[in-house]
Length: 183
Image (cartoon, rainbow, N blue to C red):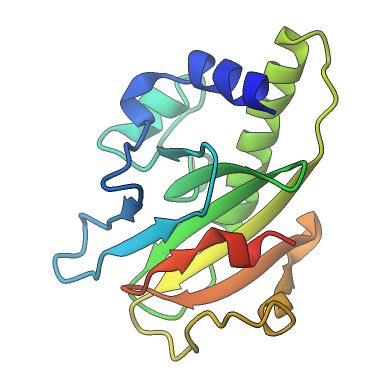
């Protein structure tokens, strides 16, 4: 799994990588001034976090597409790669100021990420890897309970659209412990 993450980090442009601060990763929404910061935390191992929702991202992330065509360059705010329990968990994170759906952004992120992972597999002579995708929507308006330590309560995901992505609504501004979402 470590070889897979190293190769992924090697092929993705460094300008999109989010660095940790004190062992945690800060998710921010610069377009909304009072949006609360959310911290992603983990217990062990490496994790890669990318933010493709940056200035001029339509052209720098999707240079072959016509960025003026509706929804062509839509993508989730952050993509997180976290190996846990012999699987690579991919978290497609969207930051919202209202409790709204992020279905199209999550599904676009899923397809984009699948292409990245298949490219890594090809470069590593089609190394097998088990991948689990999760869509996380952090809303500053959401009325959702904090993550509990009881893992059975945390399995309350909803299936998101045709992609069968598991989706979970979370409160922005709270710490998010990814280990509780890896099952």
